[in-house]
Length: 304
Image (tube, rainbow, N blue to C red):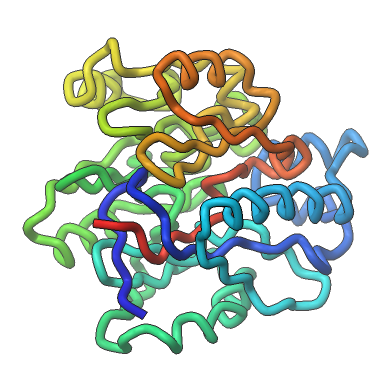
């Protein structure tokens, strides 16, 4: 398999899509990894497996429509394997295994059959002190954008998934790229104040546009960096409530084709008015786990 991913929006050829099969029981309050899951566990509204399977199948149907080769993880009994974005990512022709939360290590084992098809020299695993997850890594032309958390209390936040050692690791691995980190807001208890990953508050779409939530950045300068790069007129600003529902976590199959949760009305209008083909699918149940479309995918090959 010849890996190739250099941006977020070029024509997708091959992808790993997570699975909701045998997802396991509803977690306890102590088992929650993020504040949004916690909210739904407490409220008794945590998503059930059948609903999540239907949502992921709708996503899979869109991939079929565009003739994308889809790999699925091997099933681990009673285990959440929806969010394949967290466990690894491709930059150019290199597959980087993520150092994820220790409890989730088995998710990597479940895609080993895909990794076995890659050139072993192109598969890397960062050292243990390097924390980095795919949701924090975003490619745009010669840029690599990385979400991180610079607070001294990093280790206290289960919602802080990529550290500055992770940023440095990518800089060292790709010396010819412009690597820019973004300091994200984090909360253990308030989902509207928590950008779990960079793709929870920003994502490029098309050739020169992006979806952004200003309050997701701890530093105004980081937000301004993206405004200067993309141009204010090319950025669709989402509210705190839209960020909570994961409006920036769409997924591009091509420069002009974006998969979107069907209830994102304001975003859909903006995309369609900018000549995007918008594939609308139900994904509101999976969203209750603070992850959406981009989180469920691990692109392997996009056209150059």
